[in-house]
Image (cartoon, rainbow, N blue to C red):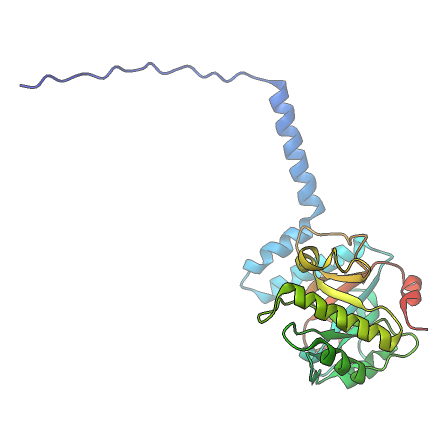
Length: 274
């Protein structure tokens, strides 16, 4: 018959917790910090969680709140929109303001790649003349950069009062190296600058800017897209900030991108063609 061995039991230790004013103070500071963050970014937090909502009307209501909050935080900055054929046929006589803020500028997509003109460019370019307007080119990384520049220059005629041309780069190449992409971008920028006599602006998202463009294109001005809920203020080195893509504007059938210029309406005028 086998003998059994009884395990020794270890007596339960008494709680070693001791009251400490230091711990109370630390917890209080953390809770206060959390409260301040929630209050400061309440609309942005709601905006973030709204993507889980199944009700588009609720989502749009929260988006309106976010836009209003950013406008409230930037009372002296010029507001504007950017549009393309995807916004449909626009009634430009009805386009005037956005969430109570006057629209000061409009960027219009002109061309895509080496051979495509935006289907609504002519109508939108003429309609946007009532605002400070600018034209942009959607750059396709795997297409010839000089042919893309030529297509833009043939399509867009800038007049006094218009903004500098914009290069929109969002994608990475599939058929060439990153270094070759940068060479192509620089060729486009140089060709367009030579044609219009003004340095172009570069549009991209913040991650693309930080990862690929910040160092080698530091002598250019940037228009940055960043919709993150925790970003509530325009950065000093952003000439323009695109902070929403879901605004509703009277006269425009589809939702619109919203932008801030990093300056007043008077400063915006200094940026335009002479």
